[in-house]
Amino acid sequence: MKITSVEIFDCEVNRRDPRMARFNPVIIRIHTDAGISGLGEVGLAYGAGAKAGFGMVRDLAPRILGKDPMKIEAIWENLFRATFWGMGGGNVFYAGMSAIDIALWDIKGKALDAPVYQLLGGKTNDRLRSYASQLQFGWSDTHQMLTRPEHYAAAAGKAVAEGYTAIKVDPLQVDYNGGPPLDWEINQNYFGLLYPSQLRMGVERIAAMREAVGDDVDIIIEIHSLLGTNAAIQFARAVEKYNIFFYEEPVHPLNTDNMRLVARSINIPVATGERSYTRWGYRELFEKQCVAVIQPDLCLCGGLTEGKKICDYANIYDATAQAHICGGPVSTAAALHLEAAIPNFIIHEHHTHGLKACIRELCTNDYQPVERLLFDSRPAGAGTGVERVRHEGLPGLHDRMIGCVDGRRRAEIHRLAPAAIVPVRDDRRRRGRRGPAFPG
Image 1 (cartoon, helix red, strand yellow):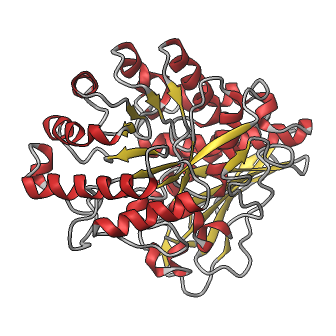
Image 2 (spheres, rainbow, N blue to C red):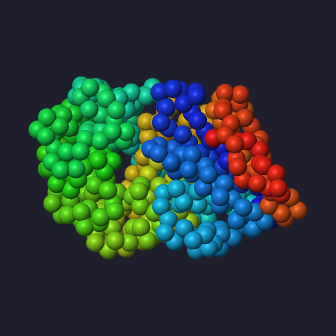
Image 3 (cartoon, helix red, strand yellow):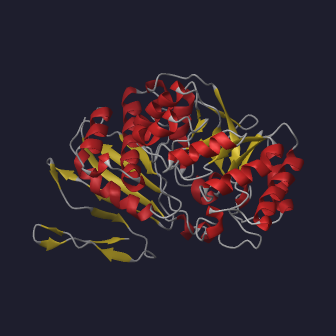
């Protein structure tokens, strides 16, 4: 079996739902000469980077054409060690690499007629407890930015009423006025010390949520690395009395000594991982014992191949694991397979974006929690269980194919372009001619 082509789907879901203006999943599909295809996902749907991730897959795809998709480890090593940038990495490179890796696992599972979790060692978890994630954006199929404590309490109450026994919120990301969340603008003092009004805002929101859900529901606080070390310690100490399950990304992970100082200075377990890539990116976090919970994003950390190794590495240091999920259906499915297999699983993330119709409709399989909000850890079908991208008739979903004819690489072919998409010219030359124009 050989890889024959790679498709890249740029899912501009804001064309379906303008409220999701800054969310842009990218899904890929790898085809083989055996008629088996596999889906992967680039983990840059949020923040800045989706289009770069799209381009990264396009740059990496020619390297895998003609190769045996069953040799996943060999392909991973080649992408890591023979691309120059693989051994330096960064989110864009590893996002492209991760998408390819997940698609290869999907192909392997389909070829062997086995779900991916069986290939990862089989299940250690029959059911996966899930939490409702990012309640600062509400808990419904409509994107919101919550401001008042009672709004936070209502969102928490709704999630718990649906059966969730754990919730997650960033109480500092959206300001009092519902202005741009702090993944768009910054409050510079957040990296020093919080002002009394800012501290009060966050504490009041957590207090309202705790009162709404009672003592038996776990509350996870997410900070998105928006605080400096001193502010992170300051805020954690202010909310410790509300029995916080864990404290996610209190500071960015690039200085592990700062993360360790936070962990040693507070009485809440610390979590991080979505901005750490490969085992090498996690090494100091483990060796300095900075974290109690790791959160590798399988669409960023190096795929299922590397995600499983990271979780096994964490187990040496008694760190538990949950896959970070903030993307499309492929991201969710891959995470379910990993979490079914690892012995140090703690909880599964179900993001509020996962409730939105523009996300749920991207693939034919839409995994949502069942049975009192516990995920079944056996996604249906072989491979990852996500059968195909459901792109027909969906505005804003387009793709490019990198093909292979008679073993020779050829130019990308623009396959699907809704009229609303403005093309951007590709200036690379093929055989002395200018290449076709592609959507950006």
